[in-house]
Length: 107
Length: 388
Image: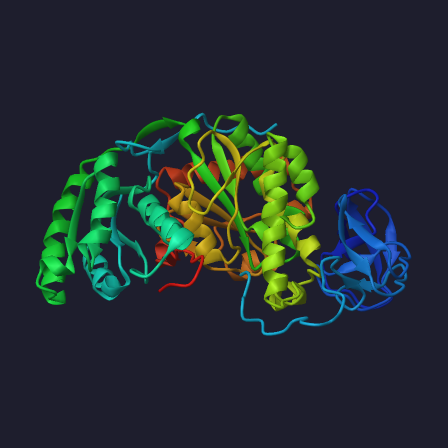
């Protein structure tokens, strides 16, 4: 069975895998966008796959919302996560990043 | 277009909204009597416990909001009667005044009225509780209009399935209830981050739009002032492992719970909405204190989406747990009340919303949530500053 990735908006730059996939897997899209994409990486269920090349510094959009900024060039089909996507609200100096962790927001 | 019932089953109260449960509430008003009050609640059948671990020494806004929350719990719609327990008469008198204005049955007992004897406090409280239980057992539910229904929406231990499916489902149900004249509440202010402009456009007034944006800004400043980058805190490690990368990604999924209707007000913690419609509460996002903010404001039921299985529930408001993650819904089949995973496998949003509305109506009419069956619920009033 072809693995499926879910899209929210027709112009989304990423899709969400509905099953774990291996690198090289052909993935078909469901939701607002249709088509197919080839996974460049092994990607876990509900993680994101790039639907087109994304340049470092580019804002990544999903469902009409910006979900962060690319920190590296990302190839179509690559895994998009914290290693190449960062919050626009992350402090840029690195000072204080992830220090303490005393306030546990959620769950 | 989603259709649903025009009424729900509720127990009428002397003031405020009708309840979908008819509990005796043992309300502990001071930290000193927490253990005694829990013991008393445990010995009385069909009783829920709520209260505070704190007491004297709170000041300013912290003291005000704490009293507001305790007052809200005392007259919660799902309480048919209240047994107030406390160490000192001052706090009890403040809550007695609230209950006298309300008019529902209550009894109050202070440790200082029984010679500071915790044994005697338990003994006398059981007799008082028995009397209240008898009185509330005579109360009957009746059909109530949807204008009297206040649902709160929450998400916890989210994964991408929350934002993709479960939260939009709550949004569809929120739109239905708002259109039908009822009320919906959303909190967790930090999770509006990145969506403020859109939320501001949906605000009933420009002033409210500015207030919504300021509320998010204040939470972000709070995080930064504490030396915290939100990355690693929100989304947390479990969210990230599940696939959520940034707070914007999580937040833009989280606000889907709010549906699409105009935002009527920005509520303070535990503040009751003054009008029907959609309301946002400026509150912390950690589930226990977040849910209690909604409950103290009078929410009769919580709709709670989860990706990975957050089990926390309110003690007073039945908390319907939903997941659109098929693995979670399957593995936690006696903890997740509603499996919404069909939304990612071809089921339509309207079809799933109609099913969820049926589940809400059944829950209002008395069907127990798994959280109620397990006794998983708690209440935790948030704190807003240091005490003396």
